[in-house]
Length: 404
Image 1: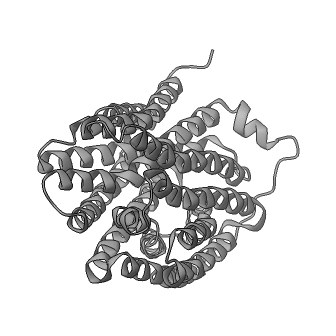
Image 2 (image 1 turned 180 degrees about the vertical axis):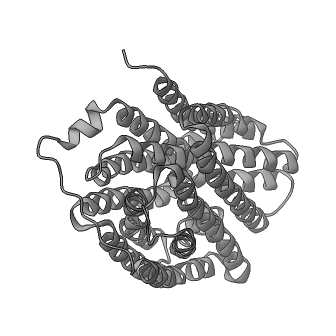
């Protein structure tokens, strides 16, 4: 089929998403400074990220569900505009734990329509033999957006502490919203009719591939979002062990974590395209098992020289994110048209609830082992994320076996 969603237009969509995601990692980038200035426990600090992720999980559900009924294009435009406005509110009004908690949660509540409905849009517009590459581009733009958020947050810390980081990252999403709406304007707003004899539970529970892919995605989100939330703090702790002060350690952790997200973008783009050529299932198992092993080992290695530690973090980022476009593309091929939005809604809600709880659980383990050595403290915390890797690997393995 011929589509107006050309590769050039997808690239502009991805640029818009980078701008819209500028606030995603703001709290993660400034977390060590917020803990110091607001006298927060690790659990309270993790709760800030949890508020955003819970809002995002609900947003993903509502906007994805609406895309089946109202059309993906219309839903994307509404979400983008809401995300831009809420980010401006956060930029100028979040000045303590309470205001940051509620405003950061509001941003999450507005953001979901620039992810799952765009998956539906790509599924509608792009042929399966090129869909993995398109999904890879979409997910790569997420990682680039996270990297940009960390970099801009680090710049804000340099210029004026966490307050300036909030302002700089909060002002960019409104420009991304306008760019995204303009780019998608020529596309049709498609609404697929539902089949009378098919229920959503048939696609969620009785469709074996859909069930395994959704379960694997939920576990993948636990591991990935927990890692994203705490890897800047982990790197900052590594810097501090080498003698840097808290501000230097925070900036170093933010910048290096930003580079990690860029590396993750390479993973999403390359693995999405590779899955078009080699198939989805074996590649999915390889990446899930690799990220699981790294989750169980990386925290114990905090005393490694920083160069080696950063190289390990890059490999961790590659394996954690590399399976994202494969999971999403495989699901778009397993679910019937007209139901993908609702399946994505449930997948996203459950996946991001898991992802919201992961930083909280991680912080709780850090508090529990706060008097242990750094290797034990961080090793046990990252091991909680490895549990998600175990489940994701099991689901990927089951995908390769024939149903009994």
